[in-house]
Length: 414
Picture (cartoon, rainbow, N blue to C red):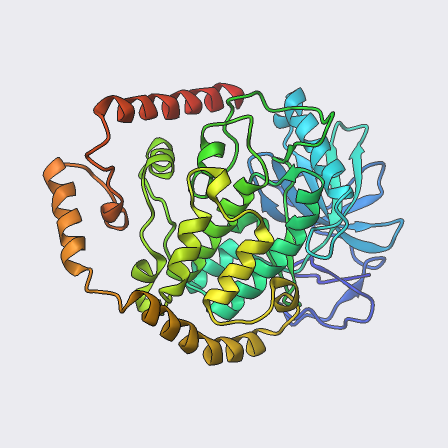
């Protein structure tokens, strides 16, 4: 292995220069990683000296991720190490172990590979994973705001393939979000972080107490927001649909200024049609029915599988075939097929339903109603106001449930 003396990235032996720094690489037996005053692990080694840490890659609430040299296997690896304070919590340790165990039984090209789980003499809890070069989907979305449909169809198809193996084993990811979708340098997608999974297989050990809410609020299904024991793989269908909606429109389907507002919106309000929210980006009306079906409040009325969701999204853009084939096509080929097929889909939709009318008057009416009620809602949520036909007690009851769930989460996080 070789290393860059400036950024401390590790490279295979056949590399000569660091593409980021332009520096000539040196052998790892010739140079050592530079110590980091802010992190004593950098420059040192863990797990009996097997893994020498070169640099910090990322940081999260549970732990920190490093790039390291596996001295035994002579390869670059990523080490996920629990924060010291987190490692004092037995539940956090059990969840960390389960992340390794679940990932280990899901050997798939679109799921990050894990090599080992370690607990060394210095009380470091470590998951050793393959090192990935690229960026999280979240980083790309912050930079680009919206993504072209061919790119979205391709990565959704790959995510669906990765999830299908987990769902066959009754494992629900339960924390799908752009941060956990990794876009590798070779244009391959990998699913990350199976630490929040729900294992519905027979005899599986339950770590999360019933009624506890786990996940990222913007991408939660209604049953996940309520911490229901009946939660299954269809929660991941909802989350993947929410990611798709955001990538194509630049907006999340359910917004709020706080956690309770987001969860209340998810459980009680309809989303705005993606063709309306993403009109400036050319989102077609054919996608509206797909999202209506994917965001059904009742799981039994939702698109049943992630594969079916990926297929429906591709068909809405005029593609023939299924996600299995689209996952392996280039973006350029998918783009050509979408440009050729989408006009026909829209023409058929117009014949069946008629052209969409001007919704500006309806938007104004909803905006006026929100202003009259004195509610601080987002403009994107104007058309999703709670119907006035619902009794007031029902609204208050839902708010109570949401707040109670958040209290449970707050205490469970201690």
